[in-house]
Image (cartoon, rainbow, N blue to C red; front, side, top):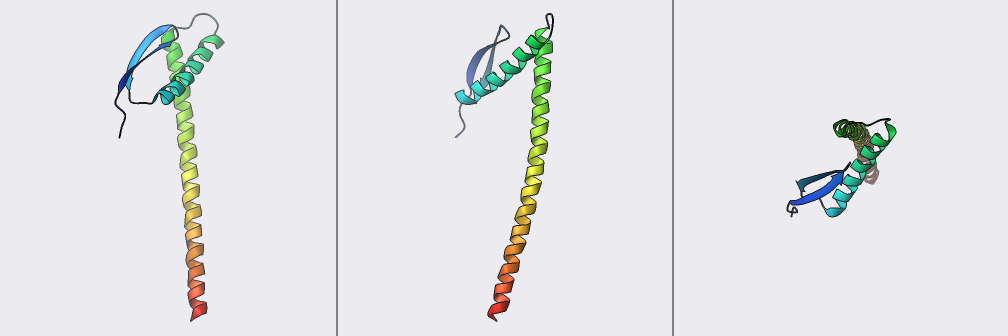
Length: 104
């Protein structure tokens, strides 16, 4: 059963935010830790004052980059796994055929 959505309040870059989510407390903590690390690192690495909107965009781009890379890695993993399964299936079929031929 899906969790009911609830209001989650948090502070990011000194600003209060709130959103409705069905994510667990652990998932939200992990999400907020990632976003905070990216936004705080982005704002600390830049000299001068960077507008919060620009920091948020840079964090979004970083997250999108990670997502695209993981998507590609998963597709390659899936293709490799499907190939291995197909080869194993063929080996099993060939072994069964050999056993049947030997038993005749």
